[in-house]
Amino acid sequence: MSSSKNSLANKAQAWSARFAEPVDELVQRYTASIGFDHRFALVDIEGSLAHAEMLAKQKIISAADLADIQKGMAQIKGEIEAGQFEWQLALEDVHLNIEARLTALIGDAGKRLHTGRSRNDQVATDLRLWLRSNIDEIQGSLTALRSALLNLAETHAATIMPGHTHLQVAQPITFGHHLMAYFEMFSRDASRLADCRKRMNRLPLGAAALAGTSYPIDREWVAQKLGFDGICTNSLDAVSDRDFAIEFCAFSATLMMHVSRLSEELILWLSPRFGFIDLPDRFCTGSSIMPQKKNPDVPELARGKTGRVYGDLIALLTLMKSQPLAYNKDNQEDKEPLFDAVDTVQDTLRIFADMIPHIEVQKAVMQAAAEEGFATATDLADYLVKKGLAFRDAHEAVAHAVKACVGRKCNLTDLNLSELRFACGLDTRADLISEDVFPLLTVTGSVQSRQHPGGTAPQQVLAAVQRGRAELKL
Ligand code: ARG
Image (tube, rainbow, N blue to C red; front, top):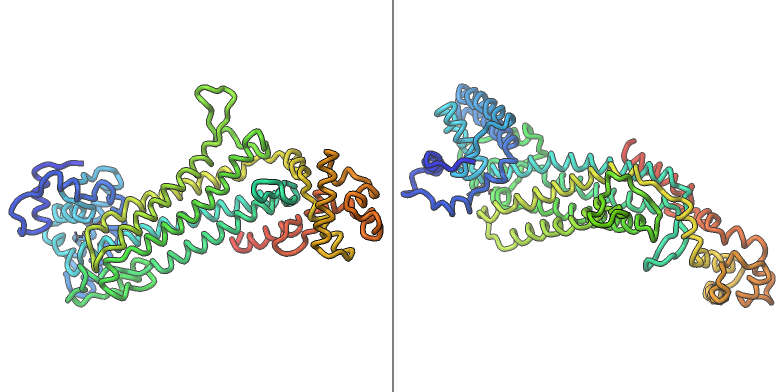
């Protein structure tokens, strides 16, 4: 980036003759946004072209001016894409850099581009255009992740694993069902993102600095040209609020919270103490000192990066909260947190969509873990209720049986019929427990019996996968 004396002169021009001396060098660096807002370059040009076309259509500028602007912008776009554009710190931001180059290339027509416009409505438009295309990309990556979860859930619709509460084995579930829980979370995230896009997709241009403009502009035409669903209907609101960026970061924070929970589970499952899954080496790293280590760096970093995305949300909320209407320079600080959230979410989703299909499941280890810890105790209680016992009494009877098994260091399924009746304290009530109890006490019998929408039975998992596919139009 250049900051030559020559560009200082440019800057004085960009702002008008109001200033008697050049801005202090540190102030220049402090106030410039070109170091990061050059990411808006292409949408800035797109917005300017739509504005210029509208100005010509409304006879505010001539057709010849428009032609010059189009030619100049095409060249600038080429220079930017080729990495040849020289961004100048002295020209403060992406908008002034492009405008200065345009004027250098085409002369007077370049100076007419800013008619009826301010950087305030220009930057608000750039933000929305830029975020909109990133939302569309992120929505695509989120679909890829959800589809990867659906496929893995289908493969493991009947794979038994222990379901946990308080990180203790609670009841047997299917791995497919567990994965579908994340599918649900990510589906709600996708709908939050779609919602955010819908509210955001309004055109700020025409608001000018804050009060609108006296030129006979056609805002609806520009809105349509740029793919907006309509215009921002209040000029002060259009240039000053960044709630759409806040909504995006709120979506991002919630999504990352979900990703982080999944990551935490992957880390646990990968630890040799669980040993439920394995991940291909390309998603892990080794230790520089312990040759035996294979560390789950991707999920750990995703869990860690969740914190910075929360930070992005808090930064934007705090940035906004004390600003009087309308535009304040504070708003220049909206970009870096937003860029950070977009980049983090995009990278995370891409890596996870790529990694999920490669999770290798150690089925035998998962099933053995589900068989520990009296995971089917509730099934025995439910069985007794179906035979006529009140649930609280059944709960009590099974608690006795579990206690007896703990003493004998065995499982409920290791008891024979009369031992089970005795352990439950129900030896005088032979009618309550018969041989048909034993299939229900197996982990397979337990998951099979949960046959209702939202239940963990393999058929229900497959039905949920079908619903998911329909939702994703796969
Ligand atoms: N770089 C500025 C920003 O990001 C553009 C708007 C400048 N407007 C102004 N009135 N100084 O917000």
